[in-house]
Figure 1 (cartoon, rainbow, N blue to C red):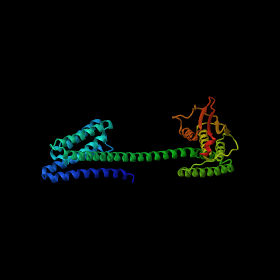
Figure 2 (figure 1 turned 30 degrees about the vertical axis):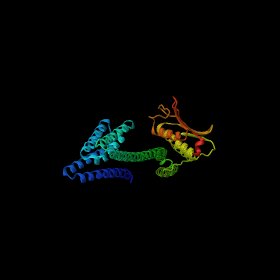
Figure 3 (figure 1 turned 135 degrees about the vertical axis):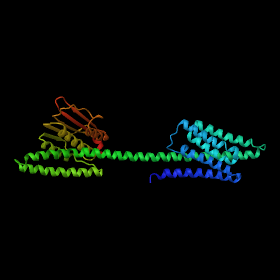
Figure 4 (figure 1 turned 120 degrees about the vertical axis):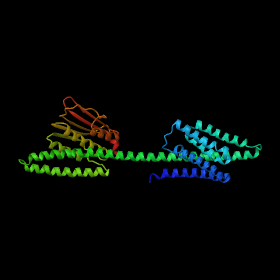
Length: 375
């Protein structure tokens, strides 16, 4: 499960804190032997561990300077005040305080404060008695133990933070992948099915008009509709599978049929070069969407389509009349179709432009480098 890593990191931190706490508590209770000292020890330890887990080592805690200062002051009181009661047996918790300082403060402030913690321990040990030899051994032992505890607390706290960040990053990547897949599906459905459904609608209207006077031609149109519906079904399956390859030759034939059914005078000119792979698919998509726009958004009487090789690139041009609105190059506020096409063409290093002339002539041009065919 994705959540297991943060749980393991937190479990390790809790286990280490529990071990440090139990070691100190058992030693103090064993040597003190009084009920109230035992209660006071347990209360202080619980408060220290609660502050550590709830704020210092908690990745989701909202850390501010004010809260950090209060937490460190509270930990300092809980660490230093019991020393005067329990003595050296409480020194294990100075490492907890030093570790919290390293976790919560920037290095330029943290290390001097850690030095203050260690100096305070040295001062306490050296002023306990007149014999300096034994305290020197004790001081060395306590300093090393304090630093080991501090670095362990710091390392485990950072581990919990890093694992939590990694888990959040994985979750965000998963969310973005789902969003990207939804966007891909939306683009493919829009670009692939638009022309098929528009052509089926036109063929249906044409067939309805021809049924009485021209039954044979109506039958021919019905056969075309059957082919188009099967093609639309194949497109849906292709979108669902994520494998998207279109034939420019087939799209030219479909464009001829759809525009003729709409009584648009259509002329298609293209070079003999065979285009397949990414370039052919992208140009076929541009052609399909361009013809769909002619059928949906214009009152065209003629449409010219050309595919030409030009200086190491392929240029597809769709021109038609009957446009009554001003057009512009693809922009953030453009329709989804133009935005989708611009995105697809630009991914191959090409360029998509849209122009509308005052006389209602509309021009859609896509330039795609031939070098993109090898991608």
